[in-house]
Length: 328
Image (cartoon, one colour):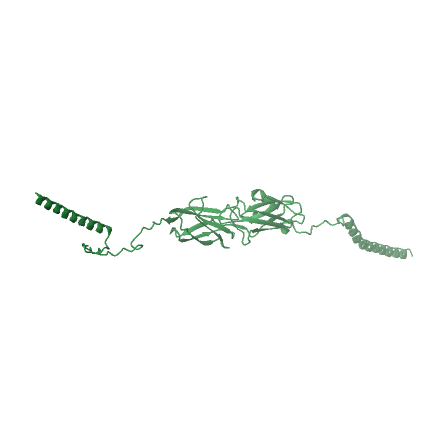
C-alpha cells in the first residue's frame, strides 16, 4: 500500500513539474517582450522630419539683359536679376564666379562680390528683383561668369544659369580710308552686345564736333554696318571714327586718323568754260574823199573842214601878194 502511494506521488510530482515547465516556457516570452517594450523602445513621439526640400534646391535666380537675347556684353551692360524661393525678409548677398561649383555658403569668402548690387532684401513672397549693370570686376574678355546668390542667415544658395558672357573688345573700322568731299564711306563694327542703338560719328578729334553722324542698331551677333556721306563742305585732312552706345555711354571707342579727306582744287577758267573766239580779219579801211557823203565821223568833218579853211587862206594870201606886187 505504501509503495502504491509513493508511486502515485511520484507521478503527481512529475506531472506538476511538467506543468510548471510548460507554464514557464509559455509566459517567459510575454514577459520578455513586455520588458523590452517598457525598457528598450523609445518614446512613442517620433522625431520631427522636415518634409520641405533644402533651401538651395528651391531657391532660384534668373539673369537677363535689356532688350532680351543671350546674356552677353561688357561692364556697364544693363542687366536684371530676379530671384524666388528665398526666405521672406532675409538678406541675400550677390557674387560672381567662373566656377559654378564654388557657389556655396562655405566658399562665400572666395567669391567676387557683385559690386554694382552687392545684396538684396527678400520680399514677403520670397522673391527679389534687382535692376543694375554688369560689374567692372567681372569683365575679363571672352569669359563666362555665373551670378551666385547666398542667404546671410540660412545659407540658401542659388546660381543663375545661363551665365553672362563677356565679349571681346568692341571694334570699328572705315572703308575706304581715303575719300573726297561728297563721297560715301562704310563703317563696320563687332562685339557690340547686347543688341543696342549706336551713334557713329566722323570727327576731326575726340570730343570735337562731328562732320557727319549716323545712328545704327547692332545685330544679335554684335555686328553693325552703316554708310555715311562726307559733306561737300568738308575741308581736307585726317579724321577719326567715334562709336558710342546710347544706352551704355561707357561702351565707346574712338580711333583717330582712319580717314583722309582729299583737298579738291578750285577749278580755274579754261577754254572749256569759255570758247575761244575765232580770229576775224580786220575791217577794210575806207578812204574818204572830199566828195564823200556826209555820213562820216566828226573827226572826218574836222579834217576836211581844216583842209578847206587852209585852201581858202592860201588863196587869200596869194591874192594879197599879187595885188601888192602890181601896186609896187
